[in-house]
Image 1 (cartoon, helix red, strand yellow):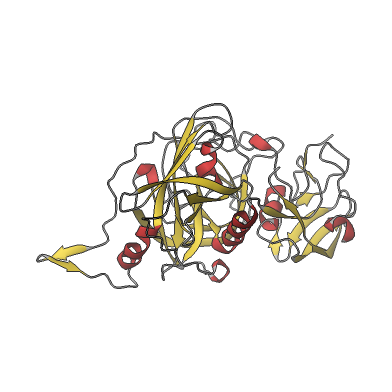
Image 2 (tube, rainbow, N blue to C red; image 1 turned 135 degrees about the vertical axis):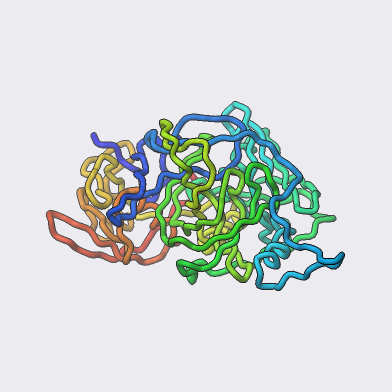
Length: 407
């Protein structure tokens, strides 16, 4: 029986089981899933990945009070005022709203774990938006703190986690003396390739680091993994060449006006020939961010109910299929029927063995690409599915269903 991917979009099985290795982008223009790493600084090197194809890069947690970016200067003893639209001006305004997150504990696995990442102020109630893989280590009996640029540290607790989206919301335990200025959110749907980007985070524990670049590409289907043993996440990402390294995870990606357009989440590191293609190098200009429109919607659900909600299509995908597209399984498996009876795909006329090649205008070249596209939508959205059956191309309209919670 061929391996399948359950429920689409159902949550992928933990630890990468049943998922193909994400192939590297090829030169023929096809948009395959990129082999990337979650950009979190972790304290131990763990094996694992999607089908053994995604390596986890770990580095020693060597936090420092130093920052690597100066946002103002003096001339003849006088402070130079930074123009509001300059990088220095944007950084000066944004830095007080960016925090360094320290998570430690067993991560729910029974072993010790620690991670350093980044987050930013989401609202005046003390909610901080970050990546799930940043805070996953604090599950169970772990601890969680957030440190602002003024050096003040606050205990925090997890409000909600969405491992599939790789989004989490934490809340400061006591905000009596905290200055909470939410960063303004932009519109990631209106971002253009070539637009300026500014990334803020804590790479290798260097809090308050600012780097710049551009939006290199949009709608990159990316699967990323981290060293916590958590489920892999899938994103229809913004790609940027702004330098992103371990510790940047969860930090804001800003536009030229200082609005958040994404959450920095993953990198494609240099390949040193190691078994996972990862190596020990840092940024090579291939960083990926969760679009803020998606992250904002997910965060709202987490604050409201504590649980994520995923858009689903209701099919199982044949993970052994090597052709173009995502093939609906032909036989029943432990995941259930190839097409969920009464589900969105069933009602739209999809059948076992169909090969999905497009979702709206987006090419679907693999199962992971399909899930990245699905999870960029909301339940109830209507999408056009293009598929092949018996050599003939057909289209159908599918109204996406929903699933609450991670599985």
